[in-house]
Structures are given as C-alpha cells and as structure tokens.
Amino acid sequence: MLYKGAVADYPSWIYYPSRNPPPAWVAPFLSAVWSAQDLIDSRRVADLTSNKVLASLQQGLGRLGYTVETSSAKEMVIRRPVLFGEQGAERVAYHVDAVHDGEGVVVEIEAGRGARGNAVYRDLVRSSLIVNARYPALGVMLTYRHKSGGKQVVVRSYAETRDLLDAIYASGRLQLPFDGVLLFGY
Image (cartoon, rainbow, N blue to C red):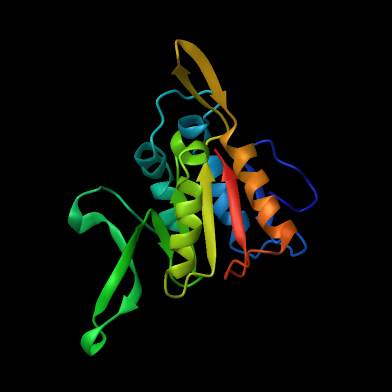
C-alpha cells in the first residue's frame, strides 16, 4: 500500500513521532487523499481553498467513517467539545474540518495561509484541547503561489510545516498530548 516499503509521490506525508510506525488508519486515509489528486494537487491545481479540498475529500473520507464538514453554515459545521460547564453542558467547543470519532482523528485542512499565517500552530493547540483527540491529521499545500510586491512568491507549505514538526519532536521541549500526528501535503 502507501507505506509498505514503497514511497509514493503523492500525497507527501510524514507521521510523528517518527520512531513509531503509522497506525492502521493512516494508509486508508492517504488513499482517500490520493484518489482526489486530480482535484487537489496544489502543484497543478490553481485557486484551491480549504473548502474545495474538503469537498473533494468528502466522499473518500466518508466511506472510511469520517464526518466531513460540507458547508460553513452553522448547522453543517463540526464541533468538538473542549470544556464542559453546568450540568455537563458543552461550554467551549472548536470547529474541525473532519473527524473520525472512533479513531480519535481530527482533520484540519489549510490552504494558502497554512504555513505562513500561523494556522498550523493554531490547529495544533486547538486539536490538543479537544476531548478525545488522539491524532491530528494536518493537510497543507505542497506549494502555494501568490503575488507580493508584484513578484510571484512560491511558499513550500508542506516543507515548512514538516520542519516545524521536526523541531517540535526533536527538541523535546514541547510535549504534544497526542498518540501521533499525520502531516500530509496535497
């Protein structure tokens, strides 16, 4: 499959901590991403947004038991609790892009601002506070192109996010409360 001795070109991915093998849910998850490559490969598809990527992944992830946000309308967003208050009522909750409650996977998809706008930091902190979140799966663009000062700028979002996670796990100074983290570049 995707990591049984062979290295696939797409999607790019890495699982943390790198001393552990990826859990069983990772290969089918990445297969769903691979199946949507023609629609979401940021190296070839222009004007991607996180909502477009989610829409392209919805069917494949849905078959795997994920609940995927289908709209930003209030009744369609996916909320997961962080804190409970009086009589056990949810007091604080965060929105997530997709979730597999049985596996404890929280999926966050970031488009252009993923690497440069601190969205990945926010995703890591918020995911760490969600009740029963065991594995964040962070999706970022392989390449993001935009203009700045009239010049074309290419941001290597996946590589920059991988460097961030490498530093977190290598330094040992910041302990993330997860069983593991999947980073994938689309």
